[in-house]
Image (tube, rainbow over all chains, first blue to last red; front, side, top):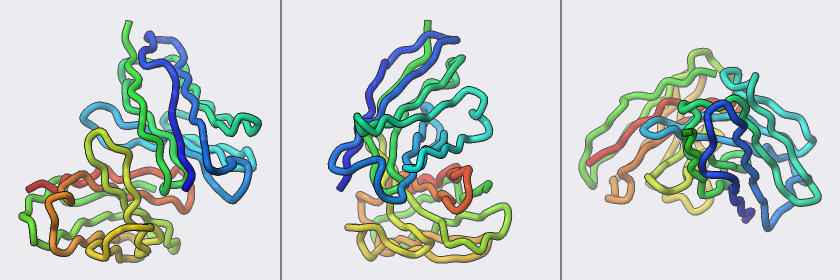
Length: 114
Length: 106
């Protein structure tokens, strides 16, 4: 079973860029027909899908975040990453990486505050 | 795909049967509908994929059904550990949005 682990700063200042990395172990991100996703949950709210990168390198982003989001992958490190620009307090959330829906990281809390 | 779950909150007791609904705004011929259980401080847990297929290790008390625009998650004989948030997700055509969730409480 593949394992995923999110990493990155837990505190980001407003207007700056949020950057997170998901490290995948016990499986290759460049093999198999898999979608590698980012999902977030703001405090007290439901799950919000952010976007995915396919093992082929193609991406798709939530329309509500598309102008600010970039998902990329580094096959040499078996990692994929999330960048979210121009953050505000509304971007404060627990951020999860997931392979399709079956395998998830434990999540990492990112707070946007000065 | 916009998904609307109902009810927002479902109050039941251990041993009861729970029926959770997920309605899609538009009909889909796809079977790409999943259900997740989510507890505080934990990652979401895949319960059902492809409308009715149980994920690995999921109890047969959990079952999924439906087609078109209406989908259902049924939990028979509720156990104390079943009380949590439940989300549906359509993953046929992106964006792979989630429903707003149903809170299953004691």
